[in-house]
Length: 175
Ligand code: IMP
Image (cartoon, rainbow, N blue to C red; front, top):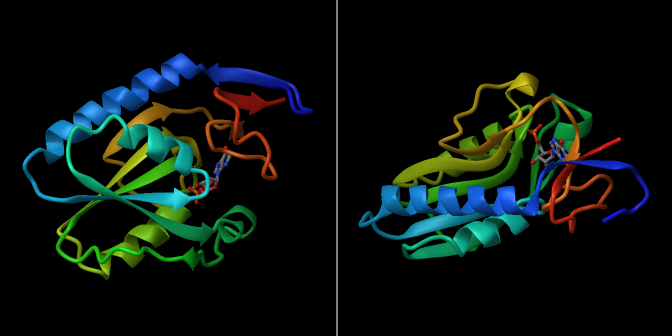
């Protein structure tokens, strides 16, 4: 879908769907029989991935959302990430899976993990569709990883450039 910039598709709709279903199976196996799982999607980019992933889960779960201002991480690498919408669920003593669209510098994820850990979940893991290890500033654990990406700015499947391109079915690089 053309919206003004030239786009080069890196991951097709089918490649994404196959990976999401693979991750869903892996997560379902790992959490089978281990009680209630809280899927935490990070607003706003992860929503597309989290919803599709949730449809591939064969285990009970609660879907909840946490909102953060990503401006801090994007414009000021040392800036503090701010929570703009908190979880509605009490995650104490629950298995929590944080669902991220992309782990880039790792600053956002690092902040979120620290914050969620203070709430004493039973377990806390991370599922990220895209991982850009070359851009990492802080070391963060990624337990379930979809694709490792080169150091490029990508859009689509929830990821935006100035709020555009979230609705692309593919993941593409802006030219
Ligand atoms: P961080 O640098 O790992 O803290 O990434 C913070 C957030 O910036 C991610 O959750 C995305 O919302 C956004 N982001 C980072 N890299 C990209 C990109 O290549 N395209 C679109 N959004 C990105």
